[in-house]
Length: 426
Image (cartoon, rainbow, N blue to C red; front, side, top):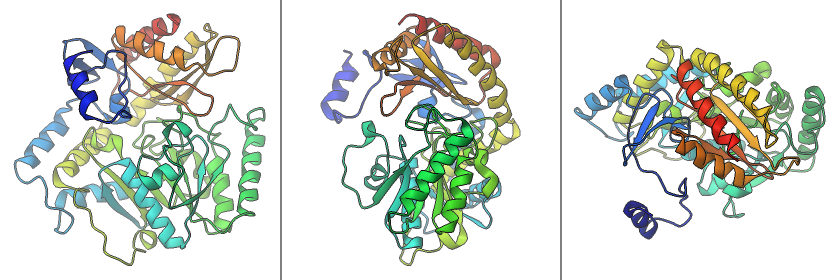
């Protein structure tokens, strides 16, 4: 164990997990590559947990940060803040929510926490619907609505949470049904839950479950849910912390795969918009955003330097059509990985869309999750010069592949070849 790793373990919590048997110190990056303290170069297919959305050391972002830092870094929300207003205007414009208001936070956890505060205050209810296998953050309230035991350190919560079927298509009691019947069964389950409880404040759902292993329902499920929720005046919160900004390729927001019944009432975002800077936030209709009847500010949410980074990053993403690149290059990468998986009995499924790809691993000849294999592949990929992530929920184990959206075809092929060798090494 190297000296930094030893020091880490002496002063930081035991539950603060590190990847790899020999933990990695990343010292710098450029484009889709990073380097460690030993000088080794890696193709980055995880981007700081889907956070380096466009590229490492993107000149447009580093220039914006440097120039803003040279003027003023921070003043709080008690003063007018031009970069914050400008980024909020751009986000409201692309949100798809009418009369949108934007509130900035420092993380996805805080964004979801804020959305839960708004929804429960607006509806005067502390009951929340959430999806099984979900993950929404590490604060007290967001742990309380997380439907993934591996990321739920306490059952105590300020909220009453009821969990709905549908976030995982290929496991659970409805997995054997076709897509139409699956949606119908999940809607029937939702209706049944609503018949047994006081009116909930909201349903919070990730269009593609991130930590849960990049699982998703058939397109249109949340549109069908939305129709039922409207009958009971229940709000819909779309957690776009991992799916937003074009990562899925087909849509700018993950909820747009379920848009038949209109946009969500609230959308939360974070991670990729700051390209590594601490930016999160909530988008909501004005009547919901303005429902709080007490003072509420943010000391660090919307600070000038992070807003400058977010604005430069979003501008670059839109001007270079990185959503289209995610669709094209991600489509090639998924097909390449599916071709490999077809030859490997330990791969149950390659799923996802755009540059958000999950590879579920099982013990060959069974349907049993194989977390040991996932750890082995993670190590082997690192040895081959590729960084990936892992995840999963109840009885699942998955590898997570989510490169920066500027990934080239050549880099996709290189990463797929390394990942193929790692998968074959198990």
